[in-house]
Image (spheres, rainbow, N blue to C red):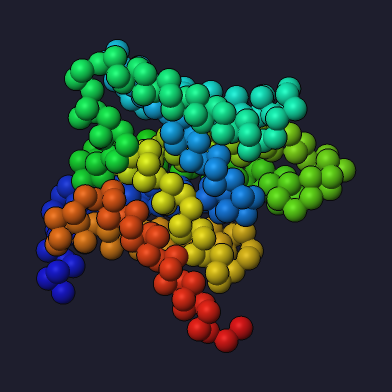
Length: 271
């Protein structure tokens, strides 16, 4: 068992495992609703929509988390505003803001000749360099997301299956939609420093997709997705250590591989 115990005896890998696991559980909780409601495009748009804020924060010397939160929050709220006040569909509004924010971010980055290293970290993260302060951010974000999901659980369930029923029951579907967008934003922003804006989507989507092969109840899907996510983090870190591969990319690849395995095993198991 030295292949397992030796790497995990190293402090920075222990922090990576804790941080990655916190991000995995956070993304599993939010990702369950993303998969149930078909919001994968919104998750991708928010992840890329962080770039302008992160770029401005990096160039100005501000904490990247502040820039990411401001930009991603603007993206999430903007989608709802544009969709409500125009004749555009939600997907079209998301796509337009996605392209606009990404273009703005690239323009800002292109104005700086010393941004290449920071941009790589933003896009792909560095889970092996995660620090205690980032663990605290992930833990606080996880606690807040769990609390919000608990408070809005009935509204989210009703909205996922029938918007008219949610309205009839007085569950305020418009507010629930906004809150859902903010939850996606919180998960992406809190996790991007570990996995990067491109790879955080793997933890947001893959574990929940794998869990949906086995259960359709929301609480059990969240629990199983969290287990899949933590497993992907462990497998990815071990692969990164033994094969000298990028940590974030290895975790993302392991998460997607778990979906393939889950689909294949579920198809082979009699229903």
